[in-house]
Image (cartoon, rainbow, N blue to C red; front, side, top):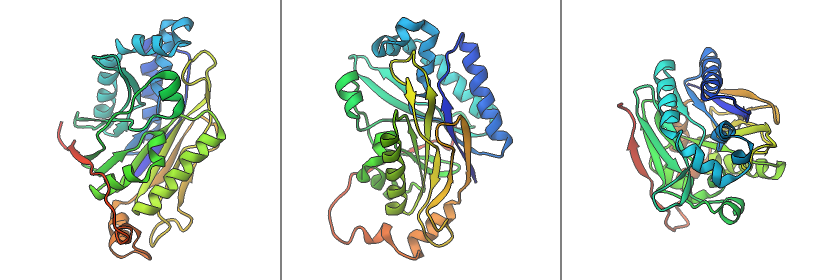
Length: 296
């Protein structure tokens, strides 16, 4: 199976139709290269704040409030793109205010059959929690799809072993890690976290960052990073554990071939048995709930 991970640029938009055209073009490009699963980044949706002018786009809370009115149309658009393209699409995460005013960062996985699974970011960074006042969500989830069981760890979440462990123990063979980091340090933490989670869980991890500069945005003004797909350095996988990595800060898709069968075989009879052996020291881990997305 071919996966495409986006290094997605944050653009100033003049209309919602312009955004729909942009995202449709990105999907079409990935599908033309044979990608069956498309991964967009954390906070890639924040470019929609530009539709409300610079004053709103420059204020994180005004942006969240204004963008909230677009969410139904945004979700409909991604659902239609998944259906028309025949691809599974992890849409850019979207900050959402709930009935009591709390804001959570939510990513949605859309399937060609019309199903949609939601994963809220579980652990907030200091910036999100202390400066923006966003709150962590949950529960930890794994999504049953026609591509197998897939999990989502939004940016900082991929740096926490317990989250990915719960997902892997619930059957996830692939973890999607959309990200948004403003410096090399943050991008490096995501990359190191992804590689560590792939090693510990003998699975694939795909990261997809925002890219470029958007000085008008309160949320994604500076974006550094490179998309990558990593795997355990084990029998049948890339010996280095790195399948593909993009050019730092470029706007592009990064492609890799992944095979759930290799995950199954590595966990059962790999060169090492990290997934099984890690339980030997004892201890408990949180559990993930499984959400069925195999039907519309």
